[in-house]
Length: 228
Ligand code: HEC
Image (cartoon, rainbow, N blue to C red; front, side, top):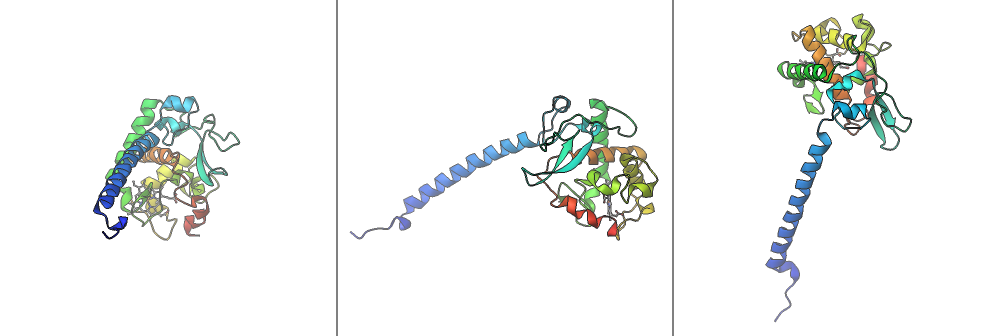
């Protein structure tokens, strides 16, 4: 009888296919669970106890958020409430948000919820991307809160005549066509003051999410702000 090569044996291929499908299913199930754990929102006690979560609780709006290079991870990471010197958040340094210290869990959650609804009804994603999803007409908003242009020495805040980042952003969102800052202009979307505040809370919260350095080169892209 002639030697039959294993490569032409149907049973070999059938078994391989079964093993590979089995392995891939287990891997996918594990990855699904791992992802849900990674993206589940932290709690206010996590923040108080210094537990780092990828998606912090809404009360993160009470803290100072910065974006700093992590040598260990090779990209920038959101730092909440001060840096421990090793690239980890201290969860200590706080800042007022719309003139108020320590928004309660309920107040912060409500504000964030309103902002999320407003972002959907006003369809920010029609022009912008949020966490990478949406359109490419206008800048990605994932880290908009951390855009130096909104700081007191940046290009945008002084233009609005406001003295805090949140008030400047809320003013811009209500009257974007008054502040033509890029070659493209954001149209007035009929956003109320309450909605604008919610949207700013939504943007601040989103900036605190650890997105593994996405959008890439955000720090370097700042040259693009203000049409420069
Ligand atoms: C019709 C398109 C369009 C829609 C819809 C839109 N924007 Fe914009 N937005 C723009 C453009 C264009 C710019 C850049 C213009 C500028 O900075 O002057 C911009 C700029 C911004 C900026 C400043 C970005 C920076 O450099 O930090 C923020 C914040 C912002 N938009 C938030 C929002 C939010 C929140 C919504 C939804 C409520 C929204 N936009 C809906 C077009 C749009």
